[in-house]
Image (cartoon, rainbow, N blue to C red):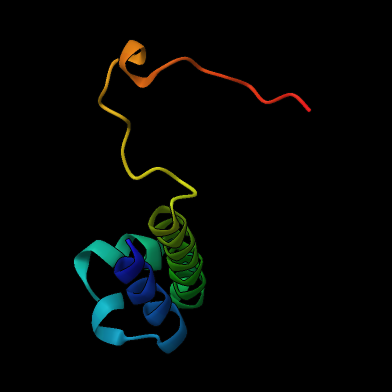
Length: 80
């Protein structure tokens, strides 16, 4: 996710023609124009980068705990 975000930011910032001319990107370019597509890809890349970093640091769990709730132990709440 981090690499995809960095790539998407690169497309937005450096306007790599080869990536904006891909058939998959043409829908975005046609809808928003070339400048709008660059902004779109830069924002998309920033979002992917942030989510990837949050997953790596553990703020967002990368996957759900596969154990059943009774195997995880009781849920306790610290109320101070």
